[in-house]
Each structure stands twice: as C-alpha cells, then as structure tokens.
Image (cartoon, rainbow, N blue to C red; front, side, top):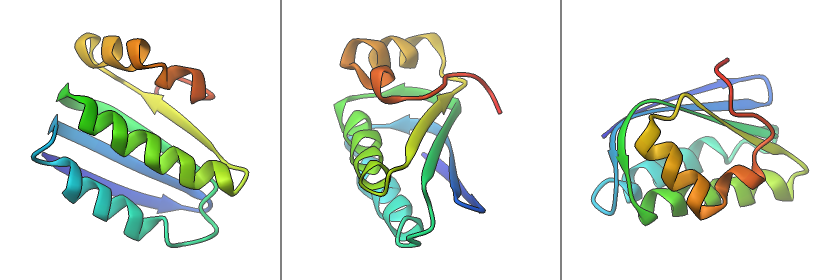
Length: 104
C-alpha cells in the first residue's frame, strides 16, 4: 500500500495505490489523521487510480476521515476508482456522502 498525501489550501488529497485492507488501513489512517490535524482542511479528496483492492477496513478509513471534515462543515470527493473498488463503494453507500466522483 502506498499513499501520497497533498495539502493545498483547505483541500487534502490522498492518492492511494495498492491494497487498502486490514493490513494497511492503520498506517493510512495514521497518515491521514496527522494531515487532518490542520483545522483549515475542509475537503478531502481520495484519488483511487492506483487502488487495486479495498475491504471493509478501507471503507472505515474513508468514512472516518469523512466524519472529520464533515464536522468542520467540509466535504469529500472520490475519483478514479477501478470497477471492483467502485462496486464496493457503491454497495457500502459511501458515494451518497461524496460531492463528486470525477477526476481532478
């Protein structure tokens, strides 16, 4: 699992690649939570172009970070999910929380 986290203005972009599962979720969660310590972050965008697999632990990572920005009045976007990952996001209802699903 590889994650690249970019902060620009009030937007945090998380580019994830590899497998976001029970083995990698804690590391990604820590990295995102550290970046979200900045109270100016009001939007989180997940770029999932390189993500090949995600299980319920990955859904938990996304939902927890959404909760953080939504408490600040912020929003979340998800872009570039592969078909298998998109199916999981759709089935879990995560897309109902996003403002967009398109690439940046």
